[in-house]
Length: 161
View 1: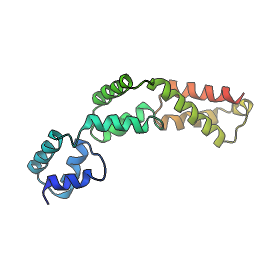
View 2 (view 1 turned 120 degrees about the vertical axis):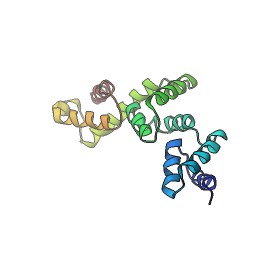
View 3 (view 1 turned 180 degrees about the horizontal axis):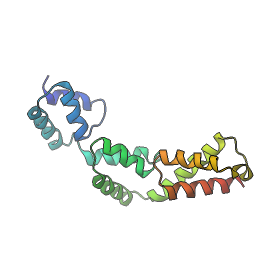
């Protein structure tokens, strides 16, 4: 099977970045020149496009993850931080929503869920610093910065009052 044919087979199942497609072709045993030719063909025809991959990832994950986690995940897929920041800004300019406000709202909802998980029903129950740290840690794992996580926790606690 030619490298381009194999790449098209892979693309029929999911989207790939240039880096991940190169890795998949290498794993299949194609030489560096074959991989390069296949990637040139795929990028020339718009079948593998890192910018599109990032844009779509932001669309689908903005309701679940913070900016930091999205950036870190995409970095593992071969996307530079500069490209991520550029596309993130482009998405924000294209859409009517403010991603920073949306990110804060997602963080607040996650903080409320975590507080419910701990069985806390009133603001008086949340005087334990250990619980607050657990919620802040959970938000950090989801990719929210400390300021956003702290604000979300405070707002979630306020909602319990």
